[in-house]
Image (cartoon, rainbow, N blue to C red):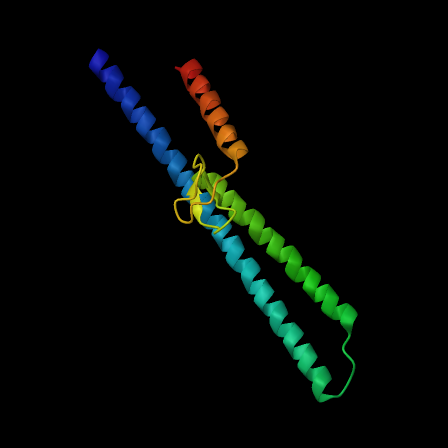
Length: 142
């Protein structure tokens, strides 16, 4: 009977791990689609700005700087959304971004393997604390 319990436990753990990974992949894909949509919207705004500037040039009219400013603000809002989406993806992957070269690296890395830049110690400590808490939870659940 003990063998069947071990097999059941192993199957259960495997199922949970697979379900988690599948969920993370689905979330990451959804976020990447949002990023693509935001980039498309930014490109559309760039095109609108270019067309507006060219029309004013052809007609020898003054530019409406307030409209241009508003378009630039829209681009900034969308750019901020893209940054937040990328941060969400990094969290899902349990990674971080090097502050120097922007390479995706392990969250516990002290130095970037790409450029050698020293990483902030706070992030490493937070990850270690999170891992300790997760280990405690798993032990309590067993």
